Length: 92
Image (tube, rainbow, N blue to C red; front, side):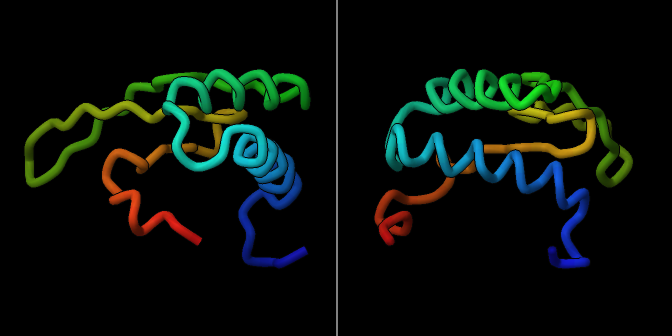
């Protein structure tokens, strides 16, 4: 395994679940469909997965509240950016 990958065993399992979701649903399914499926697959692996995790940070002295789509084992955040990427750029 690559020494630069953070938590390589956990990352490998999560990537497997992500690829499985992509093979099942393709590129343009609704985000909630992917989330529901991923939570199920991640739980099948015996891993904890939290949804819509609230985080508070400070940017230029102002409090900013954000939500992360999924957090696995309290270490790895999974965030969908599909809403910000034009579909034309998603083609392989």
